[in-house]
Length: 100
Image (cartoon, rainbow, N blue to C red; front, side, top):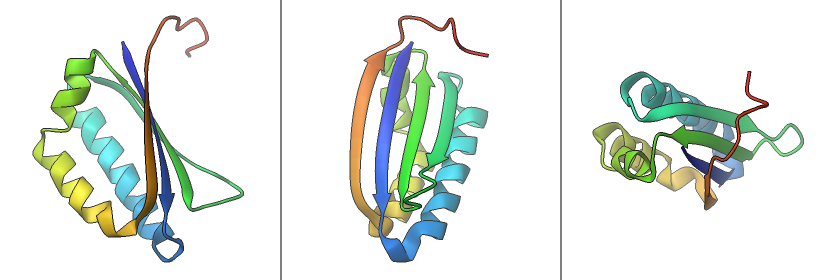
C-alpha cells in the first residue's frame, strides 16, 4: 500500500470553502477510485486554516492515476486560489495492526 500525507494551509479568508472542497474531493475519490482504500480529511482544532489529508492507495501507480482524473483536475483548479501552502509526503505502509 502507498500512503500519502498532504498538508494544506488555506488562506484565512477561504477556510470554509477549502474545508468543503477537501471533504467533497475525498468523498469523490473514495466512491469512484478502486485504487483508493482510504482518504481522510482532518482540520487542526487550534489553527482551522491547517488541513491534513491521509490517503491510502493500492500502489504508487494508483496514486499517480488519481492525479489524471477529471475530478482531481476540477478540485485542483477550484482550490488553487485558496491555498497558502501545500506539502506532500509519501510512505510505504508496512503495518496495519492498529487499524480498526
